[in-house]
Amino acid sequence: MSDTVKKIRAPFDEATARSLRAGDRVLISGTILAARDAAHKRLVETLDKGEPLPVDLKGAVVYYVGPSPARPGHAIGAAGPTTSGRMDAYTPRLLDQGLKGMIGKGYRNEKVVEAMKKHGVPYLAAVGGAGALIARSVKKYTVLAYPDLGPEAVAAMEVEDFPAIVVIDSTGDDYYATGQAPYRHL
Image (cartoon, rainbow, N blue to C red; front, side, top):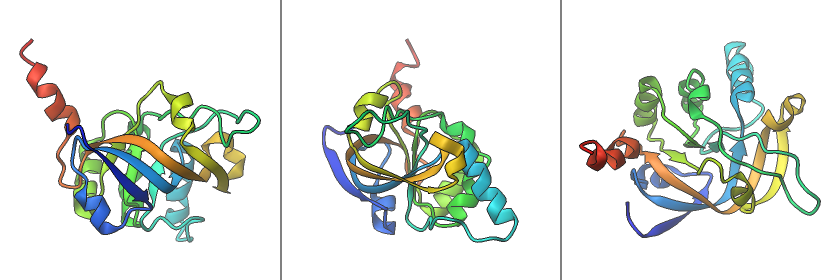
């Protein structure tokens, strides 16, 4: 991992998505979507019905989060990542719709990694347990779809210097594997 931190903008364009490498540390500014498993399930059900999605996923970066209620004067409460594997059943379909980045925590299955390589999409990790600190980078939170899902609704999050690490890049290189390799003999 490099000591350099890359400042990038969301939504991601093709060049940004493909330029990120496993192990890169990034600070993201712009708009990312918040959505968890219940919202992902609904999005795919909408596609299964042949209906248009309630949000445009072209270039979108989704953060797997269900934030806690906001304190007065704050956009949201704690906003730590949820386990990304919960979205694995739905992810390839959403990548087909133009999704260009994902942020969460934990491992992804082989089908997701293959779909990421096909579409040139990176997977980034946010630090679990640091939800209160991560929330400081969220300047605005606006529900876009499925408000009945409460904190699991699809929302737009305006972020400034949102910290993340590229875990799996668009070529399939996996920082979880390479980062652990030097310690396997211990």
